[in-house]
Length: 246
Figure 1 (cartoon, one colour):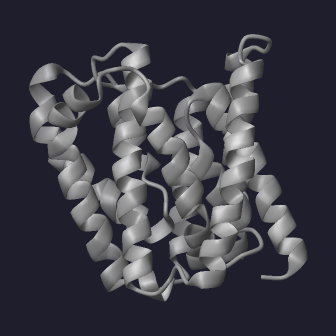
Figure 2: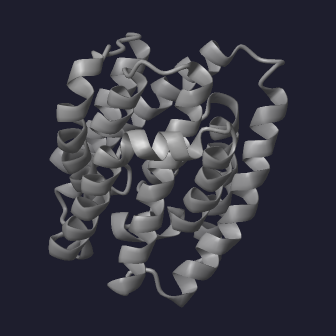
């Protein structure tokens, strides 16, 4: 990677980490969305691996409900990780051009749900049959574009869990996802030495941004900031789709 791309990439992780520290999510989505504007998608996916693992471990470890969440979410986590690996094995290594359309569509759908404040409400009786289906679809999306936010995020946010537990649940599920993604990229040679070095360097601004976001959380309107993030993701998704279709 040229030096200017490395500098821009590290700045992206600082911004994405700040968003995650402030609102509890968004690091991989924002990182992939912004880096895909100047890097090939497989390379952008490789660079998010280590910062995503570290920040998700941090988030998964806080809350005191780790093992209870694992017992509840394993029907979702298991198919998600298996399908993620299979997707990278079958098509993710090639970085198909239409993957950018999937990425743009995912960003548009996710940001639209946030902007319109659409939140699903998953009845307890539907959680067990839905979990494997959500895991399969999310694993395919994650293997293709590096982020499993659709349909994973709306599903988890629609479960009957306390807000504090939801943050840790997101951390646990995304931690399993990011570890599987990293292991798959290493196994297939997509995360080589230079990419791993840049990804490791990106851990520092990601953690710094996450700490900064947590510090300013009490001083800013989280709702207004969340809306700004959704607008940014929407515009990035529209731009991504438009540049591939026109």
